[in-house]
Image (cartoon, rainbow, N blue to C red):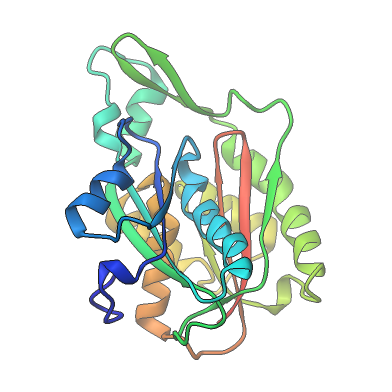
Length: 263
């Protein structure tokens, strides 16, 4: 990421590190700072526990930091090693499904204030939506042998029942509606989650092919996945395709994080 943008580590002002599949103290970001040679005054925020929503939430956190620091560069890093959470003596359906669905991955994104001349997508705003009484939908149970996955079957039904209303209301704040979105850059979750998005948002003609392709090639990498979808879009289209996109992901809480962007 730094080499692609001709940057040195000491030119980064703020590091946001997202992870939910392991715990470390000192945190992972401090290890990166020492390893890569960031300057001693770099700010940092380690974020744990957001799961699949973490990549979008990290972009949101960077977006809300940037207006007060227009000359800064913010490095978002997401890293997940989902295989570490496999419990060999847990024969529950959720553990076996999660083992088959989830994979390992890491991704980074550079977010800058308006005073930094960098090509990129423009984030228009952010929204977090919590769903009451849904703590049992996704997460971890901390047991003596490790992190035991909580993964409810009703996740696709929550997406199908709420996505249109949630996203539609959010877009109206920016004078947009679902028909104005040219690219749905969503965290795929799983095949049934993709199908739930398609049903709820009345999408067809390959609108979610990017998300489906990332899921097929890499599995669900928790927080990392939506950044892979974003990277695949940029590889295919670059920064100047025009129109609007929507970055969105759902995770433990149960909650969603969404960001409309200018493409």
